[in-house]
Amino acid sequence: MKKLLVILAAGLLVLSFAASAFAVSKAAVLSLMISPGARAAGMGEAFVSVADDATATYWNPAGLAFQKGHEITLMHSNWLPNLVSDMFYDFVAYRKDVQSLGGVIGFNLTYFNMGEQAYTTEQGPEVIDTFKSWDLAATASYATLLKPNLGLGINARYIHSALAPMGAGSEQGKGVGNSFAADLGLLYMPGWFKGLSMGINLSNMGPKITYIDADQADPLPTNLKVGVSYKILDSEFNKLRIAMDTNKMLIYKYWKHIQTGKSLKHEEWMKLDDDAQAAYESETDPFYKAIFTSWGDGSLSQQANQLISSVGLEYIYNSMISLRTGYYYDYDGKVQYPTFGAGLQYDKYRFDFSYIAADSDSPLTDTMRFSLTAGF
Image 1 (spheres, rainbow, N blue to C red):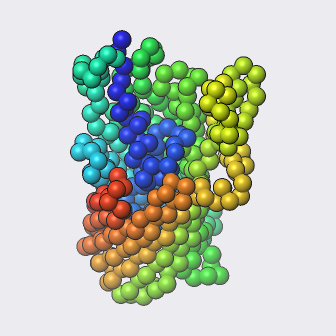
Image 2: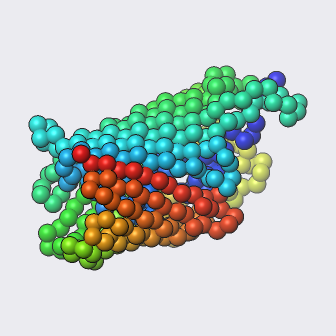
Image 3: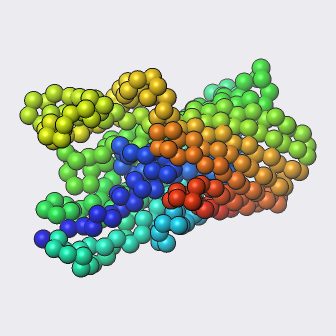
């Protein structure tokens, strides 16, 4: 009987995000949580209240409402370069204001290549065949101004995830799934406090994705991101901004008894012995329910520990040279690292670079992002 190696795409995803988003994954298609744009990455991924370029199609679609003209952004990153050599992430985004629609439209496309996997026999490590695993997501955006200082944005997203061309062991079907999701964002710039902006983005609201069968469907990484930023300096030659973001994954996982249907919270299930645990199977609420039930997943202190926070600084000299730094902090995932970045702009063209200075034992060590942005 044939089976897949344990080192499958899903395992690689969990490994990658153990160092970048969540220590223990409750969701599928975690590539949706990789942050695009070297500019935002250099600021510690604190960008939901900034969102002033084409990458707003990811960070906060409401930010598009304040933008004019056309802009396109391209980004490439070799993912986990110290761990694997054939994993990479590509991102392209475009936006354009359309007066006849009363707002701004945009789109983005993300492609996450998880590299080559091996297909072996159950009896030994002999490789029978190889295959590639990858995720693709296409997003369409629309944003408009509700007031001169308040923008509203929405995203619609199609998701295709191809982990494997076959099931594992006796499983029928393929490790390939499709789903769709929506985002909703707001960006507010209060007139009573010049230089201040506040943003919120509720992302990846959609049905669970099915790879093998509906009973094994996994939730998408529904996420709430809120943030605030302030322009400390905003003169002709010197601009300095500070930004802070906080994230919460809105997924509620519990354990259901196979025979009786009795439900237990995760911390209650963990207290059971191995035999008792085996009588339960894990379940997750649908996204429209988890948006509310996830707030009751643990005590207040446990809830606070699940939050992921970022802080970032961006300094711009003469609208040409940018220097950035930030800090990413995930208590539950035991992940914390500083980030650094720089940018060079000429006319409507900008090149950005970012670098993660994680510990030497982190898979994200030395991860770099490169972005090219062009306006026209």
